[in-house]
Amino acid sequence: MLTVLFFSCEKNETNDLLPDVDVNFVIDMRLPKYQNLQFPGNWMYIDGEGINGILIVNKGGKSDPYKVFDRACPNNSCNTKMEFDGRLKLKCSCDNIEYSIYDGSPQDKKYTRFAREYKASQNSFYIHITNY
Image (tube, rainbow, N blue to C red; front, side):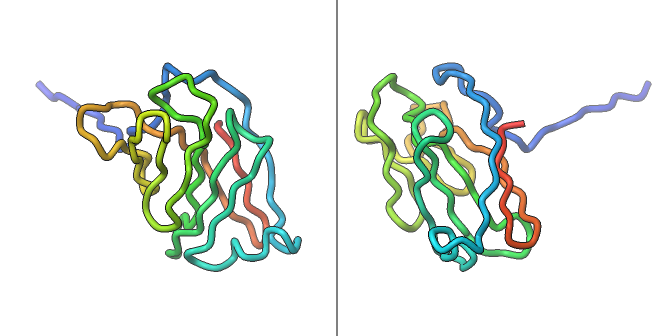
């Protein structure tokens, strides 16, 4: 008898407390306001996208250098935007929970909901951000 098991490394697929929204837009890094995103360690907030605006971080690396998270707090229905510490964590001021920018995981083990992450793919000077 042959048993096949499939495992997924994706931990951050859904978050049942946050509403579903369509996210599908492109950033042109040749535009002055986005030029700093070309360099590792740089980041920016973009309002008007996602649920409560987004954070995009160039974490560096050759494969998939961009991480994109919604700034909506995943454990609460508060309207306060999560803040990025400029290095490794997003923080929700409603409950003071911090989330890793590497995978969106809560940094307190009693919380199980991840920060909402969006997909980012780069083609030359363009970053396509989507949730599908």
